Image (cartoon, rainbow, N blue to C red; front, top):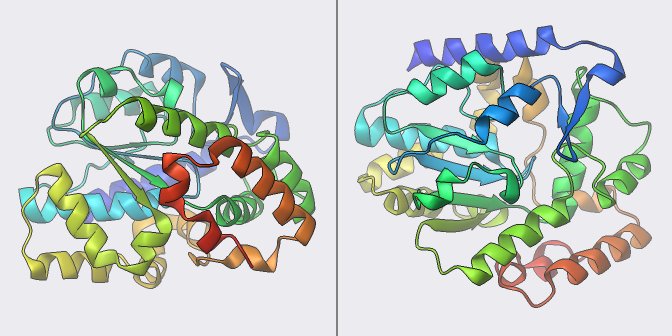
Length: 305
């Protein structure tokens, strides 16, 4: 497992070093969506359209800054403890990296831990055709936006913003990497409304923060992995934000200090003006009002002052 961590650290550091510093080279548009050039390549996105999923893949999906690195750690621990399989030496986000890295993911032995930030419409179709089990993690829009803002400004290989107000306006119109948060949410809401899929588990960042051990148990059972109560608690203890931040240099190299900032629920209160709260609430209501996801996300609990 330690060798896998070393390989992942080296891969992340290499990606950070390889990116060009010019703003024009920091991002690109593929099929109408903006992507970070530090991690993504157009040819990889094109190749993913024909990606073949396996029925035993362990898949997690989320919009950026909604807990993906947290989930990667948890999923790797679950697979390691239950199947005695160490994590892949490659970072499991399928759209990250060049074609050689994607080919290594394709050749990985089962069960593969795979994750993606791709919009629902851009996820490889085989994940749905083969009814691969997938967890989708959501986070309230206010904390997502604040975390995304700091991620940009703390990462020297991404465009930075002069102010929170500047970023907020771009976030609201979807002019950020991976596109609109609201479009992302709406697409998944439409999916869960139209399909009663037993192969999709909806989780929220906030619920996982509230009771991580219960979340670990739910995830393991969903994917069919058998863990003892002691193993579940051990994974939960290893996976707290505090422990992951403390070990971030070991697990993520130089990227660790960028990824792990606060991990709080409610940090948005330090940034949102009353007018911004009203604006995002109106848009959230327009997209998800009285929907299945709205009930799950508990906007009134996590996004009201």
